[in-house]
Image 1 (cartoon, rainbow, N blue to C red):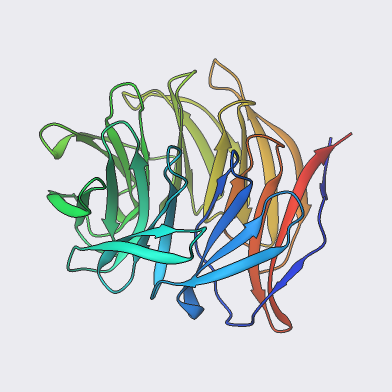
Image 2 (image 1 turned 45 degrees about the vertical axis):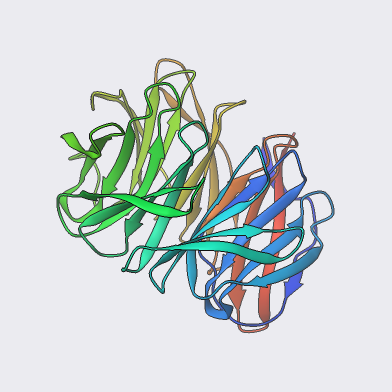
Length: 300
């Protein structure tokens, strides 16, 4: 298999800087946090054309409500916001009082979980009211990415500086246990496969590990010096970005990880998102000649 571009790089107004990417496969949209411009970038998921940018304020995390198509953002100015991407308006914001990095949305509980950038807390926002309903004290001082088990609603939070994962109970809104990931350094990406009940956790040392929900290591594989990964829960493929490369691996029910393909990309590519309808992998990056968004695909 080969990883190849499927759309040409689409030029975005130059502001130099992106963070997380998310897709809405049903509504055919790609969303990216254009951090330096303080806007939510909206892209057509079929053509790759830039549709609009919505002024949010400084933002990092992005998550989509599959029921409404609204987009939640984690904001550097201390809020979680809800955006109507069709109208291009911010519908409301929940003030959490600290800079937000990554976020995850639980559509059944109507909650956004937002971790404090380089902090010690996770903020919980009720999206039906857009009000903060809880604060979870976290171990360490550098939470990174997080993922939700849709069956148990437990939240798994990477802790970069401790090389461990904190498990948050959604009822008690507290950390009920942690498990160490000594094979990793500076944990960043974290994904959950609900069919296989496997966590995928990556480190800045270029290792991706598959773990049981209890924290048992099943397998590991080399990846680029990675920032973030995204899992296609339909195909059990995981794409990881960092170190001028995007790499795709397959996950087996046993936890085994196998390389599928990789591609050299621009230096600024560090976040990715799968379109689960087409299998396209969306990337964004900033360069000296502009900011760009592009889709990649696997090909024989």
